[in-house]
Length: 293
Image 1 (cartoon, rainbow, N blue to C red):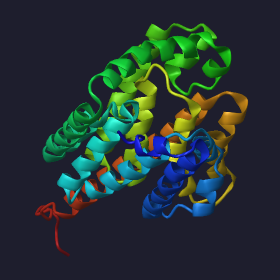
Image 2 (cartoon, rainbow, N blue to C red):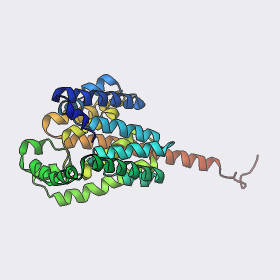
Image 3 (cartoon, helix red, strand yellow):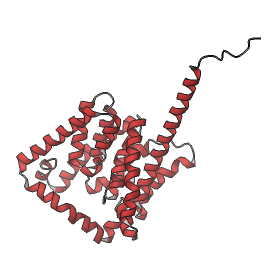
Image 4 (cartoon, one colour):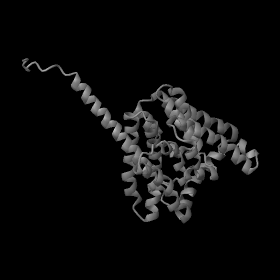
């Protein structure tokens, strides 16, 4: 339903008509974390998403807006999350976990209504055949990625990387899934930082997905572009995130962004605990056994 109007245009014109507004929304949403527009549009994952016409930029922009609205306006946040889930379901796999962890029950209901409404509208307009075709295409896509080496090299998920390297995928997922779920729960329960929440939500979804391609790293561009470079160590995560595309190691870029968010979350939690101890210490009653000279 989203792409139907663009099908009326010639290919390259329709590509521009879809990508340019998506890029504008992406840049505007990224301003919430003061990400430099010049860094956003020149980042290799973003350029890749633009070239192949992926909706990753649009979904990331809408999701960033939803996360910003979530504390104060669960209605609009839920509606945006529902739209994102319909456009690109794999990136929203952990959205129910995230919203439950944050206690955003109204947002869950609104997201469900939003997604169901869009699905119903698509059925009314185009019937059920596109849905059956999409479901039938999922196993074919997985088989294509697994059997075609160039695509397998460009997959971003731990599962796909383990399969390519001959490592047990069962063991890989047994480790990856609990980490992704726990990271999402802690991010939405203990942090209000937009960057941490975005990486936890989308990064966690990529960690638990069997297959996803390297252009999905573009969703992290606002976070990476907002990192303040004060020394050499601050360049490591951006360099690994961007450079991983060129060495067929996109999963390393994913884990670098996820590790950065985890470190920031742990720092926030420690700071909160320190402040809580200081406050509790300042409210203790005075020691009545002390002698006054």
